[in-house]
Image (cartoon, rainbow, N blue to C red; front, side):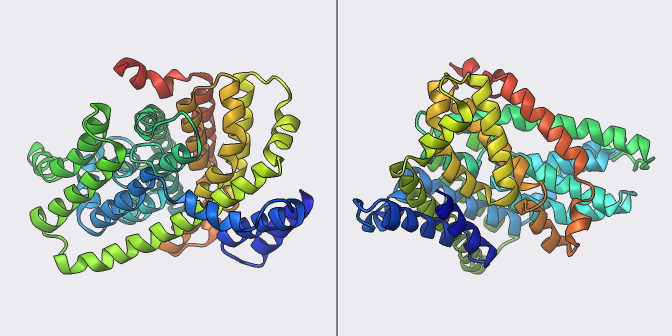
Length: 425
């Protein structure tokens, strides 16, 4: 086990992309420690990892998000929210958190939300008196909500590797925790604005609110169509992904005319590059997971950490700690692929609802993605805003504290995640 860990760490230190350590780790296990297994199984399992039909939703949601991010959707959402709450104490901070929540219901990606919402909102926050470190911290942590609000790519990946949890149920279960994070951030925005005497802006007249509301009406229909369709049982999450692409195309190409048809190949190429990176990680993670299971490493780890008969609550807290730490160093998709097969069977045996477990895991992935030292959103913000690493992380501690508090509440009270499912059932 130590040789296997050393090989992976050395490859990461040498700068190889994450897929190489995953594949190399699996090969080390199979070739040197599992001589009875044909190494060809690594290739076979990599192919198996990207076969599931549910994965088709990933490129479709990414394509829809790229279309809307290239068009005017994010600006229309920002203008809409700002017109109604911008005049309040801390209004622009509330606008940022709300716009990230709304755009998260379109993109399903924290990094896409940082770019699409963060770019216009950072300038507005600076203009009314926020420090740059505070503005960036708000943006990257509010973008975490995108990983919980449907359509969440993280939840699709979790459903792929965990038994007993449907993507549709996970999408619905993420709404409660996502809204709770927004409420915490909005409350903090008011308190922060009072403490640092952030000035209010003029209240928008109702005529302006009517105009921006009219412009935002169709973008606001996107989450209603997707979530309502899944919730009502009219279509599956994969079908919802296809509908989201059609919706985005009609909106940006034919209604707003913010994108020309000739721009679509370039957008599709960008979506394809992101999708290929995700799928390569999924394939490598599948091979890695199978090799670990054949070597019984998950059983050894869970026996050592959890003991023979752990309670459901204890399992959830251990899961949260492992995923939080893992996502501080590695891409959330990789962590979900590696750790979920280790902990999911034990959690299910302890009586944890698979959907609740998925929400807890996705929450920790979101939290870790904006937490130093290597949260992926930190480096995204650093690149997009051209700021140093230290400038980006300087304002994050209050948000990390709030997210940890919400994470504990989600673990302790599963109804925060499951109440919509229970109400439907």
